[in-house]
Image (cartoon, helix red, strand yellow):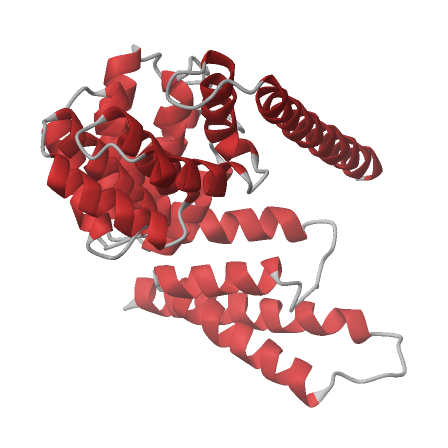
Length: 331
């Protein structure tokens, strides 16, 4: 009986202190809390009461109030309070908190702690946590060393990346299905799995998925299906599909020079960095002659175009880095 009374008293005292602290900012001021602020204070007191009883969601909602500066009580300890509420929520098993706390620990402190929380969140259905894990292992595959996380060889890192990327892909996200497909295609040398995920994305009309599947069918000699998929991607507006369809018309059974040049030019004219392969392919065609009549002026046009696109991209990157550095110096 006595321990129960003490526990209830401590909870009540905590709520009272919390309620008073939220009103301290109005002491000595003429203005009174607005009805909206009073409602926030009342809601926060209720949340604290639930949180102290072990409600992880309540702790998370308190964290959000601090994060949104909805209740700026004690500015000197606000950040500490916010992190405390987030961790308590995560430790009580609330998935959204596990994701946010895990994400906050990737580059600060021990990354293995981040991974542990992110895995719990991902296993509970938080797809953003699975995406974050996939990004961690992608970076690890490129040799990035996270503090506290064991160093993986490239193949192991890619397999772990695929494991968590698949969690997102299984939700029906076409772009992630394509990313998983290319991970199997290039890094894990598993064309069967690659085709499976490309097909899922292609079924949604995704141009990258259609093109990925077409390339596998082409390599297997399934030219009719490859042509069908390349055409669907190109006609759907995907420039990568236009490029590969143009090449297909020059290199495989459906040789058609006019169609090839039409699609290659359509891809190259976008002027985007990702379409420089189409520009390079056209330049080589006009340099070499044979398939088309040699034309050094056209070849040079496309070489100059590639150079201009790359320079423009570098300029944008440099400007973005300067802005980022300026923002950091002002913080």
